[in-house]
Amino acid sequence: MRMLVVSGYPAWEKVPKGLMPSFHLFGVHELVDHYEPYGDSIRGIFKKEILDGGYVDFFLWQSGKQHIASQVRKLMKKSREYDVIYDQLNRCSIFLGALKKVGLFKSNLVTVMHHPPYDIQLAVSDSDAYIFFNENYKLLAAKAEPRKIDHYFVNEWRPDMEWYQKIYEASDIKSEDTFYIDTGKSRRDRKTLMQAAENTKIRVDYAGEYNGQDGWARPYEVDLKDDIAMIKRIMKYKAEIIPVAMSRKKKIGPLGITSFMDCLGLGIPVIASDNVCFADDIVKNGLGMLYKTGDEASLSSVMKYLMEDVSFYETCRRNISHYNEKYGNEYSQVFEGILKGIFKIE
Image 1 (spheres, rainbow, N blue to C red):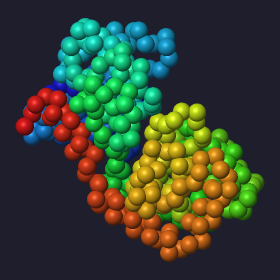
Image 2 (image 1 turned 90 degrees about the vertical axis):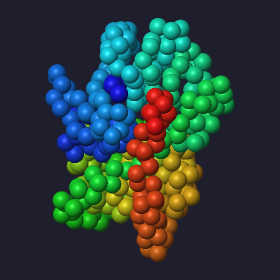
Image 3 (image 1 turned 30 degrees about the horizontal axis):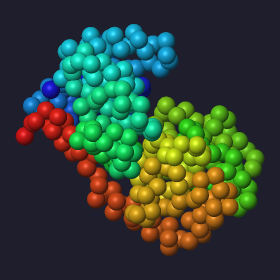
Image 4 (image 1 turned 120 degrees about the vertical axis):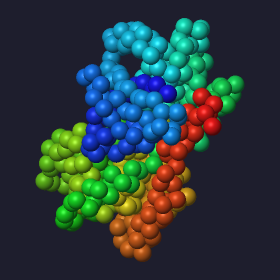
């Protein structure tokens, strides 16, 4: 099998070197035996026993409307060299899928669907497989376009436990006095977080542009491109808060999910707004607590509870360990199964 991965950030430069967890390659890394130099980039050589061997190359999609037409033309030309185009961030699929719909794009197209609603894309373009982060997203697609339901698959992100364990074992980290940390920036509800910290007199450190010295909610300067440095920082804290802002959409995309993977990988309980896509996982598996999105009183309450109830906190940590043991290898196996289904490989 010849695969071309399309993504908006070059995870393939970091994952093979152990600088980034493998879920950022959306199931591909686990299929690769080794990587080789290939032009200005690298090529992943698939394991011979998987998908009849083959290789995977990588294409970095540049953001900005001015780049769309030229990149679509490049991908149309390059697609003749590949059996499948794997669009991991849903950057090119609406364009290539529209061409596929009218018979001008011949390669198989696999698309990871991130941010609903999906109605327009499902109507105007075609992919051979659509991958969703959870069952609820898949149901939204099924409602929008039920005729494509056989092409819908769920493949939930799982933490790269080997990666987290290596960092943990190689680090000598001293715990901070601060209990909570917030590591993300995308659509974070800083206002509610700050209000809850001031109200409870519980300090929270959050990702910012400088190192703050005042208040109960304090920013820290961080380079979000350095995944290992961020993990070492998280290890100093007891729990993480993922406060995603309220949205007018009925359902938001997978905001905060990388922070959630960090919590699972490090065995750290999590507090999250109840609008995140992994909210059901937190509740059903006892991985932490939810608060009502945008509600300062609700966030204050759960912050106090998780910090003060030692027994509950330790139960959450044990539940995270059980959760990782139960679901650890499922992610790459599901993706491999999707590909085998498309290509009818036994």
